[in-house]
Length: 161
Picture 1 (tube, rainbow, N blue to C red):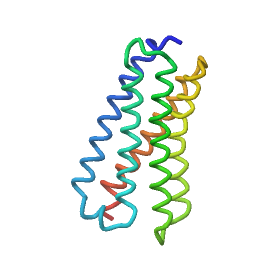
Picture 2: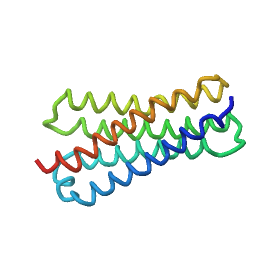
Picture 3: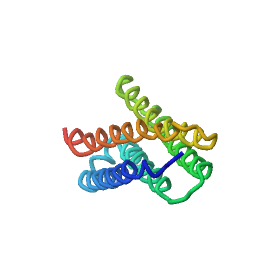
């Protein structure tokens, strides 16, 4: 597989992920008292940072030149699996909180699963040499950005209501 054709995409996604991660840090620093006041919201902030940091990490390791596909696959799978585990633990902790609406929680879970599972699939398919493996990174990045931007909205705007 020729990874050189993916460099523009990877650079753009890494830059966007870094910028959005900065936005989450600004949101947290501005509204820290409010975020800590509501149960589960700090977990949401952490979740958003982890998802966006995951995009940055995956894109960074994929930009390493002359890297064997199997090595990249192991790196991408490891990052994706750690992200998936962090998100699962965060959701399990939040689920124990009283008074949350099921549809809001379900939307959050689905979005985060759609953000993390594609990285795991890309890693697995890279390890086995599947030619279309890198295409799995596209939905992973898009759903990570969706979850990150939505969380930024919650942390900057909705938290103040």
